[in-house]
Image 1 (cartoon, rainbow, N blue to C red):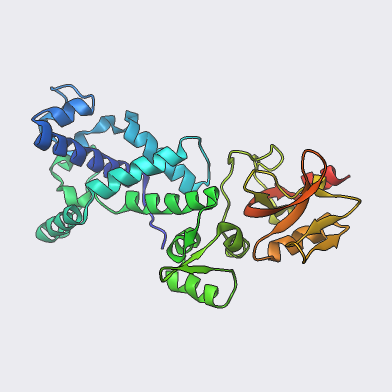
Image 2 (cartoon, rainbow, N blue to C red):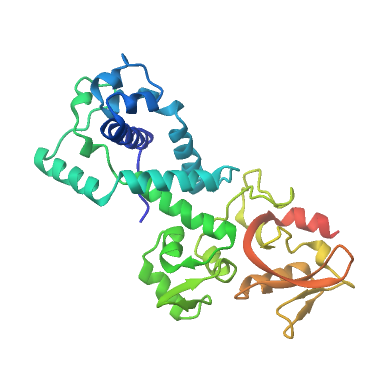
Length: 314
């Protein structure tokens, strides 16, 4: 289920992550190595205490840039050019720093100290707070959700756990829907997977919101303004090459959709679009640069304004 947190809690967990990395550098390389790696002076508050709450400089560090962009990617569905690097870097830092042994240590620390009032970052006594109270699992949750979303945006296979994360439901719920053939799946080494293009129609109906501003999106396809009425929004399939099912797919006055040998022809664009959304994998014909129609398959869906499409059709 969704992990709720405050901005202060996220910042303090990021401070904890940087602190643990600095302490490890001190231990492996030598005293002050961690402080130097963080770009801090030897007389800084953190250099004296090695306590997360004294690491006020965290918001200006590269680590926090990764955190902020990953958070925006997950919470606001906002793409940024550095997202693949951000997700990979933060996942590596979180997995290796907050290892099972370290997390067990935090748990033991909390058990030893019992219930404590977690003081604000700048309150007197905050610098004495044990490390275990800084960790809430926020970064691990954000990284897991970002990694799953990145699979969708790259057209990579999804596990049932990935889909559950993206929909904020339990994995057994997704597995049940897969068994009911609500979306196609494949099995590989006793694990069940789904291609994004196969699962997206069902995911969209469950409330999944596609990423905005992906590379290759047309200006028309990008949602840049708030939409007041969801009835004015439709989901349009997008192929791996970034092309989408639009008015220019009309050939001889008709839109052709469906797999080879099972084609359907529609005069009305929105009727064809509704049929595409219901397909396990949306497929349609579109003219190539030479004007010859060819079949492409959708790997994701983008939100578009119905009014914009009507104008393009007229």
